[in-house]
Image (cartoon, rainbow, N blue to C red; front, side, top):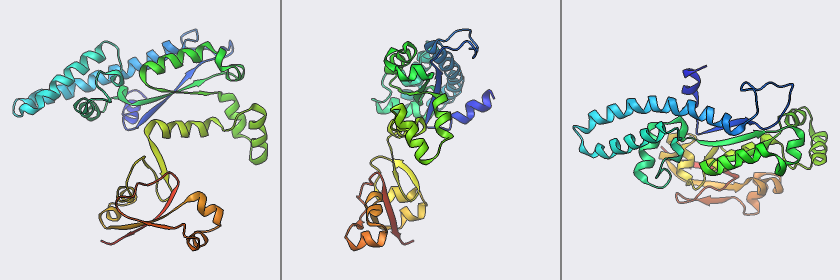
Length: 276
């Protein structure tokens, strides 16, 4: 899809990059051999080239604006250094100061760069390689590269995932048990994504950043609820399940009334009281 594809992933918070980590003569690799580090570098280079083009336009605009507003000279300096960093074939997420310096973070985030996005490398192995991950040299290559980038690695076996997806209920549980796996790759990917992005779930709307206070969580549903926030009546999902209903949990004193400073917890069920 070319530029259309790049514009789509520019909107996401993180990228899941599936990397081939298995040998199979019947499945031809476009490069003629399996080399996950090379494959990752190829994709990263495509993103970096797109970022350089994107950054050049932003740098030109910022230079012009800096003639009238000297405060933007700092942004120009950071953008020039960032562009030079990218031109060395390095991703924006490895730029010096990114994640540590407020000004660098602001400029990089405002630049909306593809190579600055957080990454999960899904290392796709065959069944033997998945069963013996310590001995899988391809997986070790991916882990070493991810460590240098501060990315996460998710070992998976697409063939097993296909088999798991075709099973239901007890059959699925038994199959996972036989494999010595507690959760499917999809479940682990969701958990890995939440961890990478610092997300938790509250059961009214969906996902919020860990540490979000009640009014801002309410705003995820509708801005009016945040603006007119009065209180949050909350109960933990597990407590509700144990009691059998919200009413039963309320009788046991498990439904709490929380104010504006309440930090929403993972798994909270919330009734927002508001007035606008």
